Length: 337
Image 1 (cartoon, helix red, strand yellow):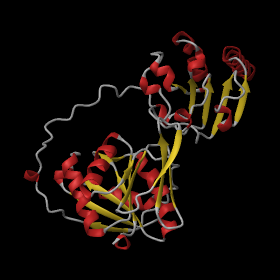
Image 2: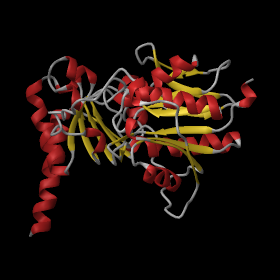
Image 3: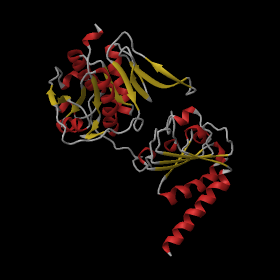
Image 4: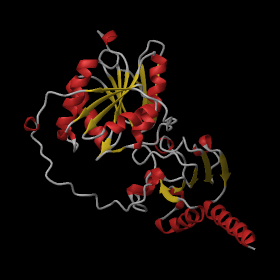
C-alpha cells in the first residue's frame, strides 16, 4: 500500500498572490529529499489567478506543479484549502508533503493530516531520508532539552512543517521549466460554512521583523535588567542591525515577544549574530545556529553558546560591548578624516 505513494510535494503558501518565502526554502530541502528517493519534486498552488507561482516554483526546483485556481480560493479558509489538498493527495498519492510553519501553514497542515489520518511533525529543524526510504523528521522535544527524530512508518503522506529561515533558500534559476497540472476540485462556494466578509489588516505591521535582518544583536539574562538593553541597541544601530533576545528576557518583561529568538520565538539566519550574555540553551540555539557568523560574549567560558560560535569572547558584556562600540566609532572617525 505504501509503495503506491511517490513524490515530494511542497505547498506554496500565498496571500493575495504574494508567496511566502518559506515555500521557496522548502523547495530547496524538498529537492534534496526527492533526489534521495529518486522521485519528482512537485509544488501545490491554490488560490485565484496564481498560475505565475507555478512557474516561479519551477525556478526553485519543482518539476511539476499542481494548480487549483478558482475564485472560491481567493481568500484562505481552512475548510476549502484542506479539502482541495486532500482531493489532490487521494488522487495523486505523494509520499512526502511539506508546509511552512506559519500561522496559515500550521492551521492547514493540521487539518490535512487529521482528515488523511496520517502523521505530522511540527517545527522540524532537519529533514532527511534514512536507508529504508523513510522521512526522518528532527525537531526539539521535551521543552527543547533534546532533539527527537520522528518517523511516520505506517501511513502516507509523511507530513512536516518547517519554520521560515530554518532551511537555506534554494538557488533560483529562471530558465527551468516544468509541467502545470490544472485541477478542478468538486466543490462549490455553498459547500463551505465560513464566508470571508472583510479583511482587517494587522495593526502591528510596523513591528521589526528580526527574521529578515542581516545583523542581529541579542541579549540574554546576563544583561541583568531592562535598562541595560540600551547598550545593545546602540551596538545594533552602529552595525545597521536589529535587537533580539532570548526567552528569559521576554519572560522577565524586558523586551516584547516579537524580539525573541529561539524555539518558541523566531528562527533567524542572519549574516552576523552577536549573542551577549546568552548562555545558549538548546531552545535558543535551534533558532540561530545556522547564522553565517556567530559572535558570543559571555563571562562563563563553559557556556554552550561557545559550541556554535564562530568567534567567542570570554568577558563581561558591560566591558566588551562598550569597547566594541568605541572601536567602531574610532574607525569611522578615522575613515572620515
